[in-house]
Length: 576
Picture 1 (cartoon, rainbow, N blue to C red):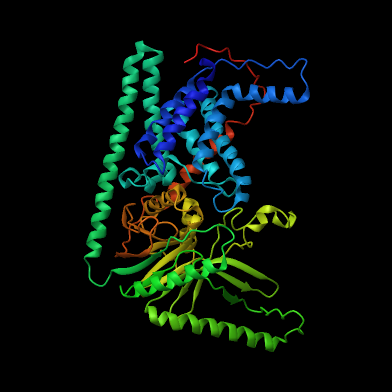
Picture 2 (cartoon, rainbow, N blue to C red):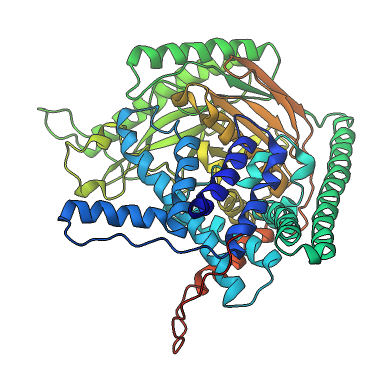
């Protein structure tokens, strides 16, 4: 078994990692995987025996080479982590069988990033002579930043996401974003790992090992103590604000759990729409200031026209004159506005609708995944989703792919929006709207807030709203993976965060990251979020997200070859 030690060490660590994440939610296990990674980073392992390729055909030589790679140090680590990712994102192909083609490549890419972490940490230790308690967290955070940015990024399954139900453990996100929480977890686990490794390999240095374990424990106690103090302080501010007269807002977050696959049958789309019409009538009884529909639940398209847009002529008819086109545009705009406002008067409150909007421009037509703010007698405000989902809302280089390419059947291509989703609420507040997985990216939410501050009015929204749809995944762990990002966004921005989810869980989160209202998982109904927005400026006010960038650069630089440096073969030491 000694030749498979890298595999066994990695597999044990990722098993604990898996149990720390949803759906098991054994959150505090997240501090244990870094202990095992200390042994991978510091250890020296016997090299794998090379395969005998003599007297072998091409196919047999190929199989033997693959077998040799799998027995190497990095090969064993890769296989163990590949198992972790394959199981963790096994829900990915549920919406459509064609996505199985993306499940394996994504698992492979994610497992490669773990190899990058181990290799970078070992180089920090050997080439830069960096202390291990710094090398491991630095390599991890740098790898995480790269993982969440390259090729649009994939942000699920981070160490810090395991703590989303424990707000007292994620308060350092105010200082350094979600990367700061991950770095602190790594620092604590690495200190414990250094202590245990010292006690096992060099018993005479037991005092040093005990001091390392004690140091990690002190960090953990400090993390919890600071979190409890901060959560209590912010919750008291929220309670005091709620006690003030005339400041409270009542927002109805709608939720239904009708699940479906691609493509969605028309009758299902209509049934979901009617269900949300009924839920809106129920919400009206609560006298809300705003009713929020989840993403894509309004069944009928919304048409918008940019200046200079023209209505395409029906097939077989003559071209419309500019005057006829303008008349047709005005008729469409007036008809859809009359229909919406007739219904709005029954609801008695402004509404955010999740829908597909078709926008005509002078030279083309674009389709957007949109959130439409509608209020009687006010201009409608439309936010078009900016961060689209790869293979769900767009396919890279799709114009070069044949029409028969399987993934082209998933959906109509969605264009990326450009405007910001700032809406008024209760005549005195403003909320910033995002759509679905945009909430998973710390950089995206922060960039929108920074963009608003750079406007002539220098706007700072009072709270954040996200509309999403997780109906494709039939209530499995994906919904919890999605939910795990919301508390971190609330802490990073120190704002209330509200979510209206179809097929998922609608919820409200305080600026401390604490969930204060939540729908039933797999259920339907109206989730009321009653609160008074508070102005709390984060300690670094978004600058903490640069922490991930600062850590990413050394991870890239450490792999740059040094001119004149000879490759020295390392003689294997005794195995751990």
